[in-house]
Image 1 (tube, rainbow, N blue to C red):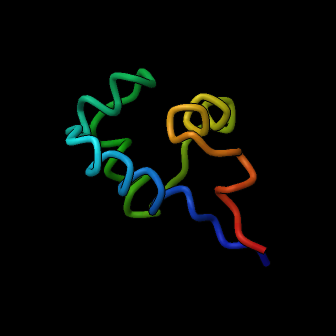
Image 2: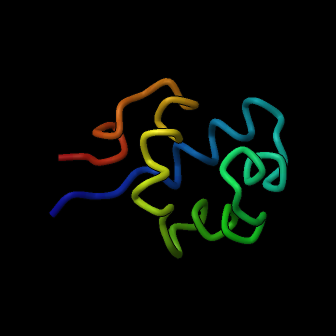
Image 3: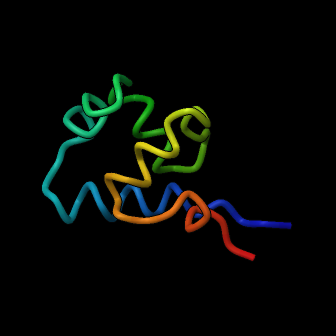
Length: 67
């Protein structure tokens, strides 16, 4: 089973760039509450947002998943 790593990547990126959850959410048109849930792994971003998130994080969509 593959583990989803997007929550950790989002949290690290956001903190390294000194962005609030609100500021990060604004980049994707989602609420700060959504970002909080993403970072906790309670839920995941809509699949259509993954390419844009990957571009911002300078990674591939595949990097969000481990083998």
